[in-house]
Length: 538
Image (tube, rainbow, N blue to C red; front, side):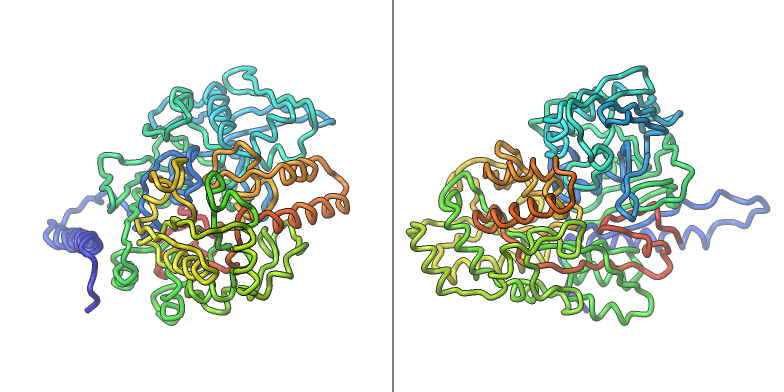
C-alpha cells in the first residue's frame, strides 16, 4: 500500500467517507412515489498548487489566474484559435482610424452578490489592471483614455494607433482583465484583494475553504452565460456541476491513487513520472494540456545577477536536454533544443542568436563567470518542495550553478510560499532571494508584449525586475511596426539583445499533461493548459 502524507490521507479519507455516507443514505432512504430533486453534482480536481492569493490582478501565479477564471468573467475572451471574441461585451464599434472605440455590455449581467454590473465597475477594473499589466501600460502610452457613456456603454480614445486593443482586453494570462465591483477594484493595488465578489460562472465558498487542503466553489445563480458554444475562453460558460472542489494533494502518489480509486475526477497537472503508467489505465485519459517552457528567473536588483555578464555565464551553462530529462517528461513530450526566448512553434518565431547555445560549454562558462567579476558570493535559490517538476528544475539549476563555481544556498519551501517571497524586494540576506525557477505556458511566452518576463519594461513590478533600455525600445518599435518583414527584423534584434543580456533563461520546452477519469467528458476541448471546467460533464 502506498504511504500517504498526513494531509493527503486526511483529504482522501474525507472524500471516501463522504462517498460512503451518501451511499448509506441512499440505501436507507424510504421509497417514495414522488420524484426527488437530483443530488448536487460535484467535480473534484487535484489542483496544481495550494491557493494562497485570491487576487488575479496581483500575481502571475497560475493557480491564482485559474481561480480568477472560476469566479470572474472578462470583457473579451480568447477562443481556441487565438481570436478575441466578445464575452461580457455585447457589441462594440471602432472608428476607421482605430482611435475611437465604443463598447456596450450584455444586458442582465450581475455580480455574485446580485448587484448589476455597470460601466463604473468596468472602468475601475480596467484601472486596477493598468497598474500591473504591461500590455495595458503600452495602451496607456498610446494615449488610452477610458470613459463611461452610460451604465451600459463605455468608450476608449487613443492618441496613437494600437492594433492589439482586443488582444489586450482578451489577454488570457499574466494579469488578464477580470471584472469586479468598483468598490473592490478601487482597493489599493499594493496588496492582494481579500474580498471576492465575482462576475463569473462560480462563487467562492470562503466558509468551506480549508487552508492547505481544499477550496470550494458553487455555481453562481446570477451568472448569465453567452448563447454561443464555449470555445476556449470565449462563448457560453454553461456549468454542468453544482459544486467544484480543488484539493491540494502535494504527495503525487496520493493524488494518483485518489484518481485511480475514483475519489477525485481530475488531476490538473499530472506529475511527469506518472504519464507513461497512466496512459495504459483503461479508466483514465491522459491528455496533452499545453506547450510550456522552463525558466530560470534571476533577481536583477542585487549582486551577483545585477551584472548581465554573470547572467550570461549561467545561460552558457544551461543544457536544455538535461533539464527536461531531470524534470521527468517523456521524450515524445519534449524538444531537444528550443533556440528562442519565445515558444518555439508559436505565433512569433525567431532563432536569432540562439543556435550558439545548443551545445553547452562549461569550461567557457566558468571562465566567463570569473571574468565577469564573480568572487564566490552566496546565491540564494528558492526550491519548491511540493511541485515535483519544479523541484526537479530547481535541483537542476542548483547543479548547473555549482558546476561553474557558484556558491549556492538552497532554501526549500512550498510553491505558495515562493510565490509570496519572490515578490519581496528585500536583499537576499534579509529575506529576499537571488534565483527561482518556474514554468510558463504559451500565453506567457508567445510575443514581446505577452511574455511574462520580457514584456516588462524598466520600472516593472514583476519578480526579477528586468530592466534593459534597448529591449524596451525594440519592444515599442515592434508594437508600432505594421510591415511584416520589418516587424520580423525587429523581433530578431530583440531576441539577439536578449541573448546578450540574459534577462532570464529558457531551460527547455515541453508539453504538460492532465489526467481525467473517462466518465468525465469534454476534456478534449481544453486549450492552452487552462482547466476550462465549464467544458466538462459526466
